Length: 309
Image (cartoon, rainbow, N blue to C red; front, side, top):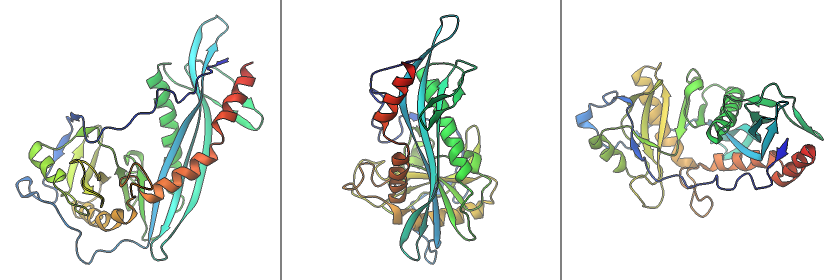
C-alpha cells in the first residue's frame, strides 16, 4: 500500500450551485393539494403548531487518505481510507433546548481490490469495503452509501409519540417511518414546469408551495418552502421537503402544514453559517459534533502513511 502525500481534500471541495442547473424528467402530479391552474404561495395554516419534540438526523464523511494498492500480480488499484459518522439531535421546543442524542462512527478502506484485510493503526481500524470500480466517482459513491446506511440505522432510535423526524437528504429507505420528512437544501434539477416554478421562486419567507407527487426511481409527496432570511437570488432560502407516497394525500398536506411552522424556527443566519438559512442550526451543531468525533485528519493521514511504510 502507498499513501498519497497530497491533502486528500485538494481539488474536491466546491460551491454548490444556487438553484437547479437542468430540467428533470421526473413524473409530476401537481394537483395533490390544489389544481395546477390554482397554484399560489401558501402561508402557514392558523392553528397549526410545531410539535414538542423534533428529531433531526444527519451524517458527515471525510477522506482521510488516498491510497494505491498493488496486488500479487503487480496490478495497482486506487482506493480511499474514509471516516464517516451519523447522529440524531433532539430538539425540545417546549424547553427551547437541543442535545445530541445518538452518534455512530465507522471507517473503511474503499477499493475494488478484493479480498483485502483491514488496515489497523493503533486503535483505529479501516475494514475493507469493496467497490465495483476505482474511478473517483465510484469511490465517493461507496463512501456515501455506507454513510447513508449509518444514517438509516440511527433514524429510528430516539422516536417518541408525537415527535417529528427530519432527515437531512432524501427520504428513500426511511419512507416507512411515521411522521418523517426528507429535507433537501440544494437543488440539482428543476422538477416543475415553468409556470409552477414561478410560484416556487415567488415564495416569501415562511411560505410554501402546494404539495405535489414526484416520481423518479421512487415516488414521494413533495413541496417547496422558503426559509426566512435576507433577499437574494430566486432560489435563495428555498428548500424542498418530502414524505412517503404511501400516505393519504390529506396526511401529506398535514405534514406540509407542520413543516411550515417548524422548519423556519431552525433557520440559520449568515454570520453563523455560510450555508444559511438552509443549513438548519441543529444540523450545523450535529455536524460539528460528528466531525470532531472523526478525529484529527492529519494524525490519521500520518498513521496510515506509517502503516504503508
